[in-house]
Every structure is written in C-alpha cells, then in structure tokens.
Length: 193
Image (cartoon, rainbow, N blue to C red; front, side):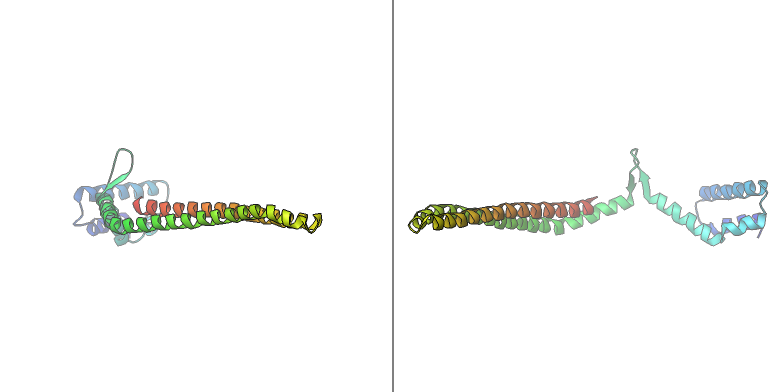
C-alpha cells in the first residue's frame, strides 16, 4: 500500500469522527510519511511499519474519547467525568468506612486497655514481691543470714523479672497500637486518594 492509499483508508476509518480532528490526524501522518521519505526511507516500508490502518484509527478514537472526559486544572490535575465518578464511589464507600472506623476505634481502645492492664498487673507483682521482701528477710533471719540473703535475692529477682515484663508489655502494646493505626490510616488514604 502506498502513501495515498494509506491516507485514504485512514480517512475512511475515521469517518463519523470529528472532521477537524480527522484533518489534524491526516496532516500528521502525511507529514510523518513525507519526512521519512525525504530522509531516504522506502514508502512501502514506512507504511508497513506504521501498522494496520484500522488499529491506528481505533487508537486515535480511543485517545480522543479519553481526552473528552478529562480536563486539566491549572495545577495539572485531571478533572472531569472520571473524577466525578470517583467522588461518587467515595461517597458510597463512606457508609462502609464509617462503621469500620468505629470498629477500629473500639479495637484500639480494647487493645490499649488490655495492654495497660497487663502492665499494671506486672507492676503490682513487682510491688507485692517488694512488700514480701521485708518479711522474707525477717523470717529468714531466724534461720541464719544465708537463708535471709537467699530469700531476699529471690524477691529481688522476682521484682526485676516482673519489672522487665511490665516494660516489655508496655513496649509491645505501644508498637501494636502504632501499627494498627498506621494500617487503618493507609486503608483510608488508599480509598480517599
């Protein structure tokens, strides 16, 4: 197929399309083919490299249709039918997201309450061992200094272990709550962006 046949078939494939846009496309392909011929390329090879005329026409129509639905704001963001459609989807997602937000909030509060109650329990164990330290030393004193020191050492070890447990539980709970909040905020950002 030569240049004239290609351009006539392209014009025919674009029939029913906007006439001004059709002329712009025809002049673009005319100039493209002429430039390549001027640079020494074979006319038939150029036409073969361009591909099927019907596929070219479909791509042009699809691109033009998409441009019709998209306008650009001065800041470069696209607006139009598609952004309006996304807004409607977001509005319909709100009745689903609101109860999910309540569930996340209740879950957050429940995890925080459990975490802090475990921390308080571990701290109270430390205090009870500290309170038990004095009687253990006093009672152990009747059996000799070795028993008093051993019982005091056991109480101090228990205080240390329960204190470390309290710190671990506090750190673990804080991290769990932090990642839970990050996940919830990512989900909301993904839906509303």
